[in-house]
Length: 174
Image 1: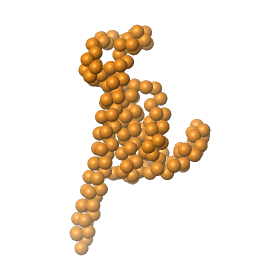
Image 2 (image 1 turned 90 degrees about the vertical axis):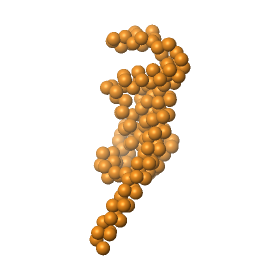
Image 3 (image 1 turned 120 degrees about the vertical axis):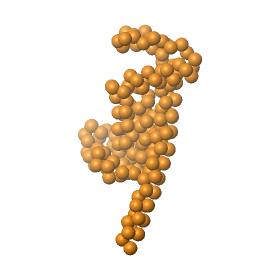
Image 4 (image 1 turned 180 degrees about the vertical axis):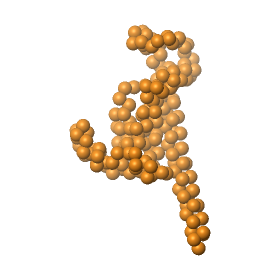
């Protein structure tokens, strides 16, 4: 795994521990497992982050952090993954989740207005929340599973490739 690349872009544990806004957490952030970049901590972080990113809820970063801390996953990776659903990607992702939910529940599809508004959302929420919930949970579980096992497989591939390259260099030097 490109450990150096991840270390270059992720904040250091010391920097996060010194952040004034996070002092209320006390020593929770002092667990070294939350900061190590190992195969399993990164795979768990991928699962946590990808699951939470598929949930249509506010404060996804807090939930991702809570999950990462509870399963001892890499905290920065888990929290940063929730930005996969940002204001640009949210509408198509959540619409696809709604469609998946209506297919699974056999619910009739509600028509979408040309302009989304709070008034439309409050009047339609009773009809769309169940398909949206089912679709988002299903896509979250699938994304988390693929992220977890995909990371483990990619990490294994990366290590095997580096071992082969190292052997080739040693043979050339001999």
